[in-house]
Length: 135
Length: 287
Image: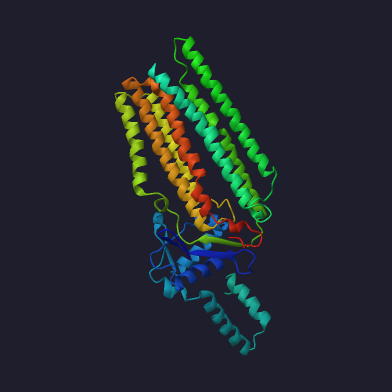
């Protein structure tokens, strides 16, 4: 946290060489800032353009991170007024949808294997399901 | 004539202030930085010395000296004109010369942009930092000052219209002035937005230094807007109150004020002392 006169500035860092996708790094950093009370409900976030310029990223990357954070109710967009931290951001930041998806998939794969389905059959079925060709 | 007697010292002050005093201050500051933070210890500050630092300063000094000599010649020429002619010298001359005076500083700014580009190209760091807070205008300049700038703009246009009996005709001085003032203010607004939202030019600059730099730039741009409105109002008053003969002196004072606001902020001693130069060391991780 950097102090600039009366303004407290919270900084985030991303590593462009990190194998974790840039949008995921952004999501993680913002959630961490919420969980550590460095930013709280109602605090304004920088615009997509500002953050993209500062981090030398494509605007689409930042937009994707914001979209996913909004889906998880960690942030909320109030039209032209900008983007703000959601009132329930702290509790919603602990929910990791990726982890939940992985848990569910693991459970399902275990059930399939126990029923004798081979890994290649699971892959084909999964591919078909993702492409909506399962029916 | 009193207006001409006043003009000579004012115009001389314009020549010396911009192309001697401020240019010297700027070069002195750059040389102090070069001595205190040499390329051997702070290589990131000097990414690619296409021209040796000393030569860059020499070129800047040379252009300033040429403009200074031209100004002195112009001053003598105006004196000769006034003594040998019934007519007053063209009022546009101090304005045109004022624009010429700023050219070395504009070239210096372009050179700074090139240096920042080289810095970005040379920056091998894979980490990027950003502040998680929007940069809003009111964080950098007081709402009162913004209010004064808006009021001065509206007041200047209305005053001009009042002086000319609210005659609105395309091509009329009032409309031209209002248009120029509007375009100039839009240009300043564009630079302010670019300062607030634009790309980070210096990849090594700490956020607190960037914050201070934006604050200085935005404040001076708002002050420039106020100065422009004031000048245009005075020029409009010239049509009504018969002070047209003072216009060259007023234009000269206007340029000096603009120089004071724009170049004056560039050479602030305090900003150099507060700036974190350690980020330019070889062994320091970048921001």
